[in-house]
Length: 288
Image (tube, rainbow, N blue to C red; front, side, top):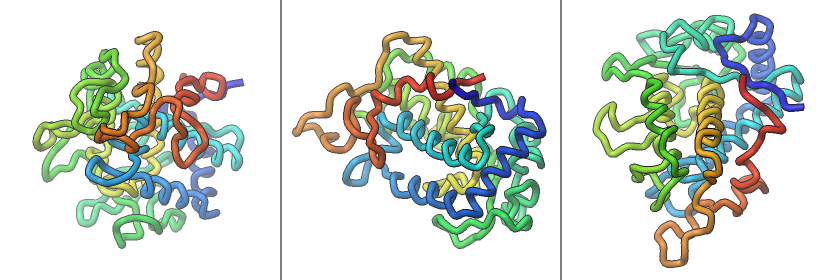
């Protein structure tokens, strides 16, 4: 039977407690840091050589779907009642609403160094030391809304702009495309300043601190953000019945994207699974 991923704003006190405790146990065992390492390993951009699987590519959505499932499976080995909740940033938009409560993810970082001082993932609680990443700071940091250069969370209108696009993705299958659901949701844009970040990318920027860059998995909100992104893929599929992951076949040998992106029936590294096999996960989980 499929289990349920719930809106973080609807979790009971007991559900929050179980989710937090399962995360802390993965961290204690050293398993959580392996997820950080994997995300860093697959954080490649348009300008780099080789395959792009996780970002700036069509496989952004199936890659993170499988990544979420791996984390969820690890959590459920600790506590079989736990699932990954999602953060609806179009509704819970304040710095004190879900998921930023003291009994879930804690709040914003302090002004001086952006260190998170509240909640179970605060460094001073002794259970969440940053060990893998691009900074020497051992503590979790956040900078909500980036006061020095203010940025707002995406809105329902921003999401609708992505959801109404009937094409999953388009050539050249990278961060420069201005059509296609995938990049409109992932959020790369040719604009300047705060307008250069849309939807998913904009949320990373709004949270700030640890959520900036390849080591963003060090902030547990990463999973709640990507669960909501995954929900948008599910909603897009239901709106555009019959629309499929693209490209269906690999780019040819003379295409600049040859060998750089994953086609529908190609293995999605580091797993032995294809985007095609990840398009329907309704037998595994559903959203409330």
